Length: 116
Image 1 (cartoon, rainbow, N blue to C red):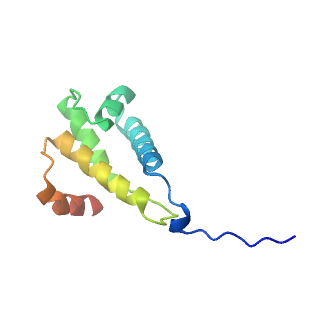
Image 2: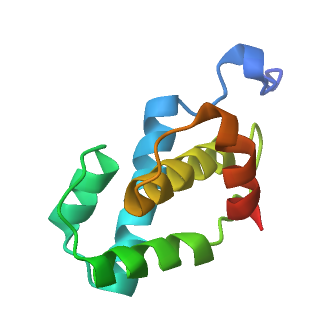
């Protein structure tokens, strides 16, 4: 018996849930930053959770440099959820590391810096 193949569409619930997207993006950033800067996983988890851990200036500079140098690839790029989540996370982390207040009016400029 042959069955009709179900079509995959956004209306059928085919999007990756936001919580999973955030978890995957955070996990990838945490692993990358730990590997490239030697920063303790606990410190990175605290930073990703939104707190401001006491990070010495040389490490803070290395973390910010790695975040600016990171390249994101989403080969599936269906809805762009992973790309947008990565952009938002990079923006928040760089603001925290550089001591910039979250400024909704400066978002465009900050995101343009990250995308370059």
